[in-house]
Length: 227
Length: 104
Image 1 (cartoon, rainbow over the protein chains, first blue to last red):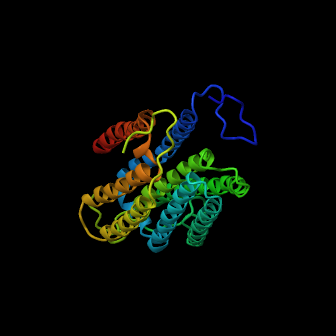
Image 2 (tube, rainbow over the protein chains, first blue to last red):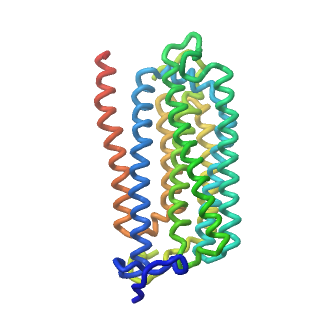
């Protein structure tokens, strides 16, 4: 059993407190999942606030939701799903030790992530233009409490976008390491664990899209909400 | 499909076909959730939207995030995390929804 220390030259080496490389990898995966669970609870607070206020001010939420751009939201959902696929393929390439493919798929994932953020910028700019940003200049005539919806909209999508920015940032050192050929079929833990993070961010959006954009799509804005 | 928790075994390599399958499923479900939101199902609109979202999330967690092939401890962590989230939702909803009924 190899028990020599991890060096830059041999990152795949098993640390002395692990019995096998498999155990070392499992420990890293478990740690990543633990972090992701804290992230789930972090976003969970926002989702809980959404559930409560939506229950209290349903009509205002429906009216405010109708101002969001569904085609752009749906397009961004598709972009994120594509980025999840390219990320899964990056991990897959790492498992097979295909250096060039890891680099290509990581670059594609970054590009799709940047596309998502670009579309989000267009949507945010539109909200500023229409005075739908919570604050002193907020204006939504005829509907009380619409500001609550937009506070949650900016809080939730903003936190999500921040996670995307961090994700793209983390991909830069991963990309450089992949270019240097640091990841092999024996050692690709950073790529795999980053993949878990990226998929988690995708899952958050999977819930944000119907909750924020598609709320009461069958109802006419501003009237007739029954529930 | 065996749980790869034996020592020395390499990680399960998921075939590309499975990834493409999940991708197609996620895309189809996205279209479905938009279309369904335009149909009036009464209180069931929210239920259907959330069922679709949960189905998408489960597909991502199981296949993209490899939980289907993870060892039992990792699966327990994942399930525990979502159980804790459910506790947060259910207990808070029990409180606030009752208050809403009482008119607070």
